[in-house]
Image 1: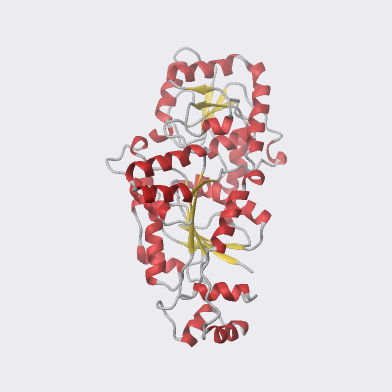
Image 2: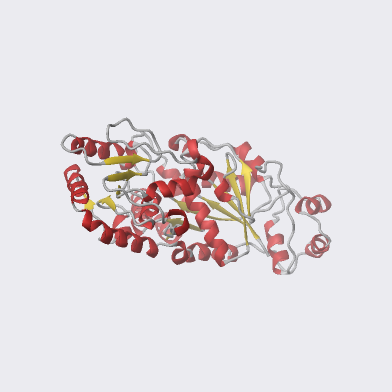
Length: 434
């Protein structure tokens, strides 16, 4: 029997959603969940269809969402959300929210305006803390409130879990801070190792550096460019690829990634790099760094954040512009060290393959399913619902025959029907993406 999972998005790279880190991560999560279980159906809310999510158990639903990070986190359109979930004809057992800032609003809509009572789980890809943003105001309290409305909230590292708990201790009551401790679990974002057939003919090019992160202040881009500018002032034996934005610098190596075969083209471009630079500033899990490591590309990474958990002392670490320049020069001047570092890079990536990391995600869904409400044995309506469902009635059919609306929760009946081997079909939504 299948469980319906509504996946709420966190898209911040609207110019190319296929390259958005949320899309890359969640597509891998779903593929790897599919490898270990076959009882989940995912409904994705997205502004347009995404090739990476084209899977038999994934449906993509039209849902407009601004993608500038601050606007996206602040914006919730109740009417658009109600239209997207189409609750009179569809059921959701679990809501998997990747945007804690919206989770309390999502939960409010479900519990107060529908007859669906799903269990809420989630993922917090980063924490919008004052130290990390240039905004005069942040949505940190919305993030913490959303986490509190979840049964489980995954985070990408022990470092981020400790950070979340620390801010809970600072701003919440003892009772709520203790709740945060129980809700937040580490779920490492894994990596899918590349298909050798896609990249084995690509040779790394000496002196070619890659910056495969966004060219924004919060990624440490400005500081990285200052270091590269200073280095270019005294030597011209390196080039730099920027994979997500155009940068006007004399050392830039132009790159073109095929939008019609984005992932393969991107990985082939990345495989050319002699080494890469890890994003700095606020340092959540860097999917981009894991992409490079899986190809054997060594990375120079900033001190702190989640990087000690990722690289474990196997990659160069810097804590200043001078240290970054020093490590770049060592990589340029010692080509004989590159093969050993490449082996270390691949070994790091293998530790974090999704095959090794998907267990906590699957456990989260098992725990959520176990928490679903179920109607009791004394229900006088249940036999009639069994009769209707066994004859192929959809949820909308049953609601119409029973004369039920928002006032009578449907989820407990659906849970018991499933336990009795009866799966109630949804009707297709009007907002499905082609």
